[in-house]
Structures are given as C-alpha cells and as structure tokens.
Amino acid sequence: MTDRSATRRPTAVVIGASAAGLFAAAALADSADVTVVERDALPTSPEPRRGVPQSRHAHLIWSGGVQAFEDLLPGVVDEAVADGARLVHIMGDMVSRAPNEVWFRRFTATHHRNLVCSRPLLDARLGTRVLSDERISLLPEATALELLGDASRVTGVRVRVDGEERALSADLVVDATGRGSRAPGWLTALGLPPVTEREVNAGVAYASRLYRAPGSTANSAFPLVNVQANPAKAPGRGGIILPIENGRWIVTLSGSRGGEPTGDPDAFVDFALGLGDPVIGELLKSAEPIGGVATTRSTANHRRYYEKMARWPDGFTVLGDAIASYNPVYGHGLTVAAQCALAVRDVLRTTDITAPGTARRLQRAAARPVAAAWDLAVGQDAFYPGATDTAPTLVERFLARYVDRCVETGASNPRAMGALLDVMSLEKPATRLFSPDMLVPMFLGPRKPLLQGPPLTERERDAALG
Image 1 (cartoon, helix red, strand yellow):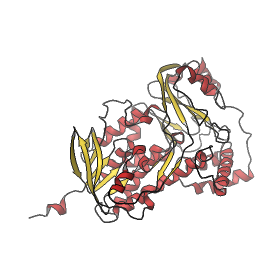
Image 2 (tube, rainbow, N blue to C red):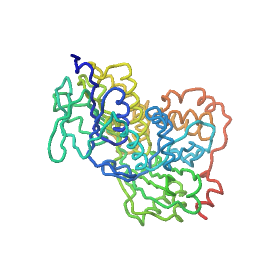
Image 3 (cartoon, rainbow, N blue to C red):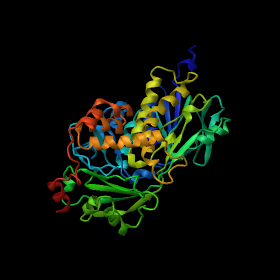
Image 4 (cartoon, one colour):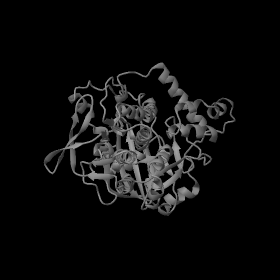
C-alpha cells in the first residue's frame, strides 16, 4: 500500500483575505493546498468593506509593486487596467510638490509606471484572480481565535464559523490580518517571549472624498496632483487628487497634530486651499462631490521585529501590515505586501514547506522588503513633533538632509530622478541614492532652475476649470 502521508500535498491556512492574504495564497499555491480564512463576507462587486478601512482613501501602487503583482499573478495588471485602472508615468503624469516644497519637473524619461485605481477595484480584481485557483479555497465569515500547537510548532488555527468553533490543521499558518494582527498575543499564549515593537506616530489624520471629474477631465488622462506635507513646518498638511475609474477623482487630505482635517464636508475645500500650495483646492472648486467625507487616524508606523526573536515556531509566518504598517501617505503598504509574498514563494522554491526551520526562513525573507519601506517612512515621520520618544540620531538627521538634496536634484535632472524613483518605488535599495546617477548631477550640475509653481499645462487647467 502507498503511504498517503508521504504523497499528500501540504496544507496552508492564510488568515485574512485582504491584498496581503491574497498575495500570500497565490505565493503558497505551488507548495500547498491553501485555505483563506476571512472574517467578512467578500463583496460580489468592487465596494468598500469593513475589513479594509483604508479602502475609502487614495491608493497607488509604486512600480516596484507593479512588478511584484505581475511576478505573482501574470497579467493581473492588464486585467485591472481593462476594468478602469491606469498605469501612469511617474513623474510625467504627476504634478507633485515634495516635502521640502520643491516642485518636480514632469519627466517621462524613466521607466517607472504606477498603478492607479480605487482600492475596491483592486481588491475585486485580486480576489477574482486568486480565488479562481482550484488549489485555493475561501472560508468566509470565519474568525481566527488562536493558534494550535506549542512554542516549537504551530499545527493549525482555531476558528469560529456560524457560532461554532472548529480546528483547522495546517503545515503552515500565515497571519495576513494587517494592523490589527493578534499574533503577538497568540505567540505569548504558546509560551514565546513578547516580540520587540516600535511605533513612530506623526499623528496624521486623513479625510477623503469622491468627486465627479470636473470639466472635460473625465475623458482625459488628467495627472495626479500631490502636495506633500513638510515635517519641518508642523503641523504638516498635504493632499492628493487621484483620478480613478468611472470618471471620478478621489481626493485625500492629511494633517498632523494640530492641523488635522475633519469630516465636515463644508470644510473640505477650504482645508485644501490652505495647503502649502492651493492648487488642489482650486481644482476642486468646480468639481461635484459624491457622498460625504471619510476620515481615519489609523496612520502610525508600527513595526514588530519577528525576524529578531530568539525562538520562532515552525509552521507559522506573519506577512504584510501584520509585520509593519506605515503612514499611508507613502503608498508602500500594497507594494510591501506583494514583495513579502514573493519572498515566501522564492524560499519555498528551494525549501520544503514542512521542513524544520522553514518558517523562520520565511519570516526573515519577508523582513527585507518591510525594512526598506520602514526606513523610508520613519526617515520622514520621525521629525514630526511627538512622533517618537527617541529623537532622531545624528546619522538619521544627516540622511534626512541628504535625501532632501536628492529630492532637489531629482526635481531638475532626469538621471537623478530615476535613481530617486528606484528607491521610492522599492525597486532598489537606498544605496542607489549614492550612485553616480545621483552624485554627478548633485555636485556637478548643470542644474535647471527650480519650478516656482505646479507644472500643470494650460490645457489641463482649462479641462479642469472650464
């Protein structure tokens, strides 16, 4: 007789069916039969849901994320574009003012293209694609209660479905539940020590509202318009206009402590007019709002250093925002989620999912894209008053000033802009900022004069205001 235990496919349980969970399921499907446990009932069409509170705010996926999406799910970006998403050139299709109040020129020489759409559209497209895989099944309206096993190995997860508890056994359990992850408590309940955590909270609040694209912009490739907050001028205030599918704009405004936007619809445009440049408010004057204002204060940078724990159980891995969540203004969460999943897939191509030590290898691999995004976010937010109990070090202050120089150089030089975008897009490590592409124009020039205002063309202004 054949030993069925030797021939069966391994099993994995992914907790959470948001983007990070769907990416994780796709990454695991070549190595295991996957069950995705989701607390909500997933919508049948693109619409916000309770389990994704950020879905009502602006999202964009940097080019590093676009590459990761395609590597995990070939063709999924084109499918999203067919549904109404856009691939936009950064910086050619973007009007953007940097935190140091420098306006970027609109270069199209770089390869960087970001994916822009509403979060519900993206989630719907990912869900359709991932859950159509016969190796992946969904268990909806199920709440994960605790891990099964002990401090040396996790053997599954206990869930509640329809008021009843049941045990799901698995060779690997993946926590992809985001900011609200309960993994720290679950691990201590198994007898493991607490994970080291760090928070950098700039106190940023967000307010977002949908608008019908004004004038003739609904039928044109209108650029993204972004005024970034300046940490050196607290309170820091910023905003973005993101043209999305179905002839709409999603507008997200932000402000740190003492300068937060509110949910008052009558105050929305006035807040936009009061940013460091009034361009967003001016563009909204002739735009028709759709619905009310959505707000959130869940914007702190929060990291859990699982990869540094002295002991780690086999059979358990944490991914995406459940490892580290970031101030959404930097737009890195979805990119990191996809890159974490890629890291998992790449490890499992050479390592058996059931082998001792595999889970630790997965956790350490996932930490690499997390660390890159963390350093970028904290390098800005740590300078807001009250953001952290630990003042920035001399090295951090030097690096922040150097990044400001990189931004100023990139604002007027395509070569330097390419290097800057390689790092901001999470395509290459921060050492790229010390390459000749950045250093030569930084120190030798020639330099074009900095722009004195937003580089909207006359045609674009007429389309929006006419």
